[in-house]
Image 1: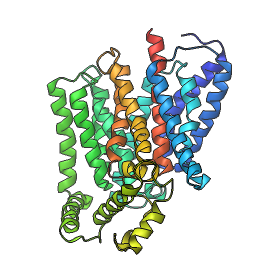
Image 2 (image 1 turned 180 degrees about the vertical axis):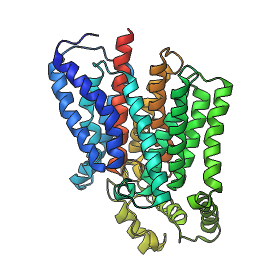
Image 3 (image 1 turned 180 degrees about the horizontal axis):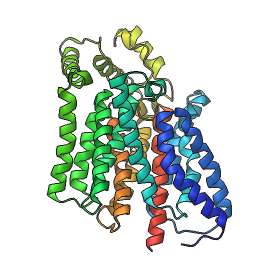
Image 4 (image 1 turned 45 degrees about the vertical axis):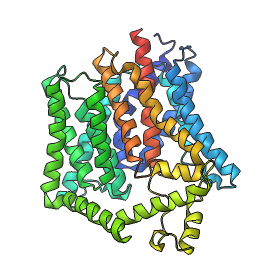
Length: 413
């Protein structure tokens, strides 16, 4: 594919550098997402300059269609139920990133830039958190809790760490593989010590999916190594008293048993179960269209007043499950659209899991699958699109990754 001006070459160079820097910016400062807004504007400029037409593949149409469908679903729900238009702020990110995809799909950006950005961020994030928890406050370290709560830190660290782990490959230089091993260890360890129990389950299920899909064509020896490394990091975390991992798991078991046997709701686990119970009670009478965006709290308060659920969940505005939240607020139709949004990248990747011949393409496919599977599995017991940071992470990096994939397919042709 050829470029028709030096402007597009400059934009491509800017994007390459951005793919290395932006993952670091968004992790260590939530204002780093402002750089994503600049990339949107530059993408629009690039589209004006580069008018080359590139054939649309079916999966591209489905991918963009899933973003549009999700935004329209939220918009219609707000208008239909007379909701607050400010609730469109977070889902609007799915619209804002579309120009990035439209431009990047016509670019000449090598996947290595995005892969390198993820690995560099995995190392930086992991070392920062490990040192911060070991040494305490320091002017040389960042307290990520100033920007994100611990669950989001655990979630993002897991995506970066598992990506690094899955990029290990026999075809790579031994030094690169050692760097990938190191980055995966420190970032996955950070995910464990940050306390996101739902993240741990999502990471393990993601690895199980890779065991069967095997986009990087691992031998059994490599599969064994990958799983052994992950389990080893978890084991070290579990038996290290200062990490709190063992306590978190014990609390999960004990608090789950207490809620099932006695209905005890004095823990985060018990409150989560009670929120799920609340969601199911609301769904019974509002199955098809839901109750509207942002109305969960009102219906929950009514159930509390009626004595159907306990009162100590009054301060929660989300049922702690992306699937239940969508089913409650947008009904069965909304749930179908949410699933469409989450699984479309996976369905798009199925075309290249077995057919890709370039290691860079296989690696990019793996990165996109890691992001998708984490959101699919983590969303079962947590909200993933109720925070701007996690919504932007999904929309921005999937958009960039899918665009780079399409661009490199053009180059290979």
